[in-house]
Amino acid sequence: MKHDWHKNEFRTMVAIGDSITAGAWASSRNKSWVHRLSLLINEFQSTQVNYFNVGIGGNVISTKSRAYEYSNKPAGNERVERDILAYRPDLLFIAYGFNDLRGGTSLPVFCDEFKGFIKKIRERIQPLILILGPYYYYNYERGRGYWDHGSIEILYEYNRGMLSFAEQNNCLFVDLLDVYNQADWLIYNDGVHPNDIGHAVIANKVFQVLASNCLCLSLKVKSDEQDIKPWRNESLLIISSRIDSEIT
Image 1: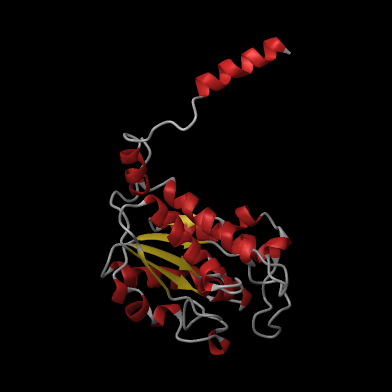
Image 2: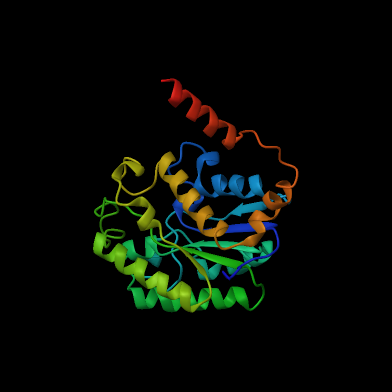
């Protein structure tokens, strides 16, 4: 039987990461992937989840990230207490790696810092953790001098490394490169951040991973099934279709 990662409905979710987590460049906050995801979760839960979006544009995971000097601070490992532990989430989305790879941080350094980041969290609380892989983008020259170290090859290298890291550290992984499928039209005209449809694609993919691994998101649906009256009788439709076919 499939492993269930979370049996109780979610109460508090936190999303930590960079500008895309914060909502750039969705046309409004309500169209950001974090907000869209909260709506999807609440659609299927009896308990309404409270969410806290603590994304910071230009943020990196650690003070040891190569571009830390040029990043917006504090780094992820400097704000665990303030931006994660203070909310005591039972659901945590971590979206680091994108600026780290763009800033030239090697994958081994990133994973080592990521391990310490998660250790800090789990010493105090035990949320379900979903790690988002790097977002697809195509403008590798944007941010020349500080943020121009990425490439399609590095994106996929990070993606593989982060998948392996998630498996080794008991976290769920969201493969965003797979869902983007290198579709440039999901990206805002800066060539880096997702547009509204890109944010929708991210939210749907994250929800897919959650729903297929967490029994709690089906509790309300399964309970409601007892009282749902069929709105469409398939057997009658089949009979009607056969009659129409015989007449013609």
